[in-house]
Length: 111
Image (cartoon, rainbow, N blue to C red; front, side):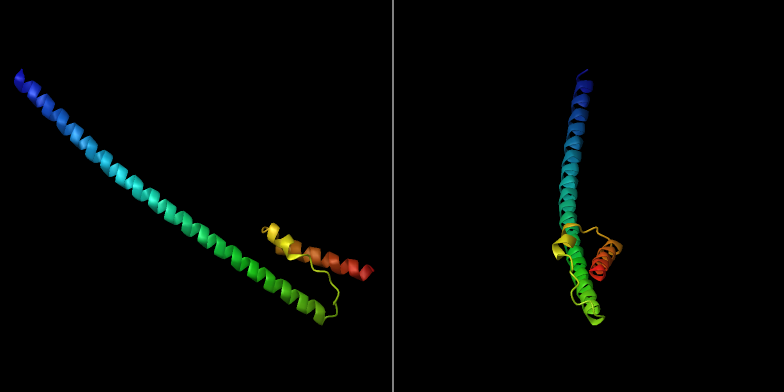
């Protein structure tokens, strides 16, 4: 009986040691994954900001080019929508922008 009791206690101690080791490994892995997620989130936000900045720069260049082309063909008094209009709605399509500008041209031609 004492042998079984001793054997049972040793097995239980072994299970407890293994459980603690597993919990420690899981804790370390979880911490590493959380750190990796945080770094990836920061990188994603940085890349997103960079893409948005580049899109705004491209949009500004295209609007400038459009203004220059408009002036070259004789539309010198075309009212360009304020650029904040485009920044507020980043999902505005090129078609919509061109449509709005075309409507501005049409309004000028009617006057």
